[in-house]
Length: 344
Image: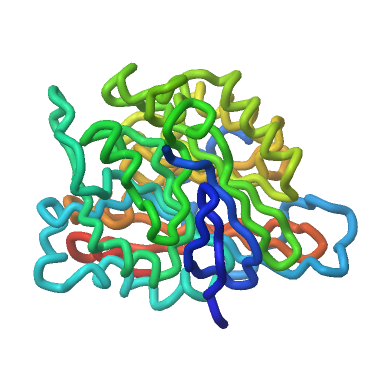
């Protein structure tokens, strides 16, 4: 199916792709407790699970079924993902076999500034500068939204942050020119549904410099739970579906911490229909609250192959029927080589 359409960004019209997309707007840039089962066991779900949630009691005539995907930490820095130098940037996505091109919306956590501007923020042990030349391959692979609400989007300061993904047809969330822009949703009209996507950063680095504030670019501060709740509620007023991409948790944890379980529940109660989590660099269980899926951590994705544990990952898939039934599952994947996740 064609993924070509038009989207508006800060008043400018740019080409982008999304099946059935009529409009997308993003801000101007000037459970349950986790299961005790292992992540690997939780991945092995039935290929046709039963619907777990109903968003609307009856289908509207114009609404069609949706397929939405979420993926974990994505790094476009060729000095870190050295395989890009020999295989090119398409290598990051070739293991997905066109999965994201066939769906209706794909969201990843972009764990780097993708810009040639700015200067390294002092005092950080790890900084990632993505190559803007990698963005056409990312867009062609079907990536629609990149969450910049994380602890590496600000690695090269505010100028690089604001330049990231600009005019490449990939909608940024979770960061912006000020706190209002950072917390604002990107809105999509897809197959009769209005979908809002918001991004939040609970692991801010450096803190508080990287936090968006009035007149100061940065990421959406996930420490301010009242602001996050308000942002989700505001998005809900204008959307049929609300998707939250959130950077939270503790690195290398295989289960969510209790405070994030509580926060996930609060976000669902505020109106979130799907939560895609990241930061732990490990795959964590799929949970639910009020029958809404919470993917606590989707682990690494376009990342280095450092170990079996950190290379074992998955793609979150959420199918939504015309009746509003939500069917979540995890599609097993493995990072076979640096920057090369492959569906298992």
